[in-house]
Image (cartoon, rainbow, N blue to C red; front, side, top):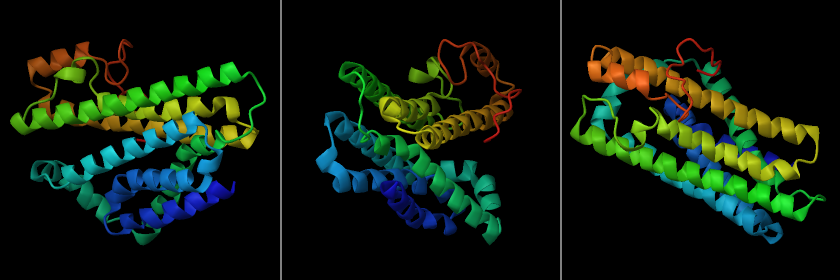
Length: 267
């Protein structure tokens, strides 16, 4: 519990950046909070770490450092800033009370998402083999998510640089329309799986499950917004219509092509 409280304090301090620019609550503040909490946890409790604890934390740092750099670099792109100008301007008009609510709620969410890494230090009394299989399976899922998200961001950035007015349908985007969001989901699902053998009480299950459920819903909401935006921009393009009907929106091999008629809640 002490580590989670200290992590919340760290996160609250870092996400103060969102009062400068509201979108930073959920972009730079997001990745920086996870990296900072991971580094703090690594130095504070490294004497209790096993190999998979090191690997889990290092994967979180790698994920956050890579994505944070990508976000900062993206915000220097004039084409990107132009495409999100209306959303950015609207968010800047929010009242101080609303911004404070966002600040506190996202900080709590980031700690919930990070909490499985903390709970893996709980004493485990079951089968050592079963624990290792579960923990390392979670690490493999995390690593797959980190790689998929990194490749997807790189492929889309490269494509958009040469084709700024076209939709990206190359590489991983041939398999799923939002592979970057899929990668994000895999990172946090893997972190959760790592901790499953170690959850020691109902509140640990609850905190960790809230974190995972919320990020999955947020990614689904992001995919839903992107779907709507792309339909507006490319809806009359016959190639896009074919792409939209044949490539799943978020999960490969699952024939879910649209989220518009699904209530996501965290949209």
